[in-house]
Image (cartoon, rainbow, N blue to C red; front, side):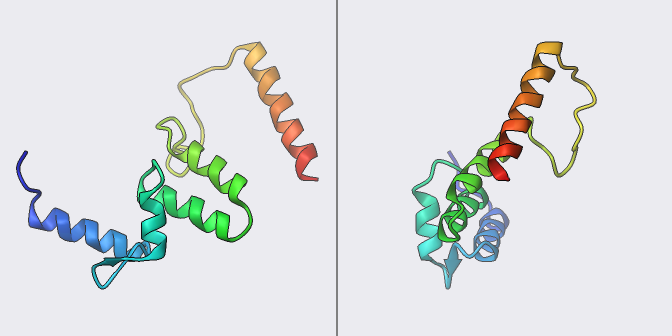
Length: 104
């Protein structure tokens, strides 16, 4: 494989700096922790910061959901192309109700 173009390297370094994963071209503690997780740096940052703030389970669930292509909640909050079977609707309602009760 050929080396990446310089502008792509600079863009990646800029993103890592913005995320707090790199300072002065050296990895931070956050950056090192993100390297140990099998996800992209933004999702790793979510998990690590969630752990630091005492909500690691919620952060891990959110990161897992955001890591799937079908969970594009920020761009398309409603899936207008798929329909749910009646049993899927029932299961979804039960899951939401259980989560609601657990969070009360």
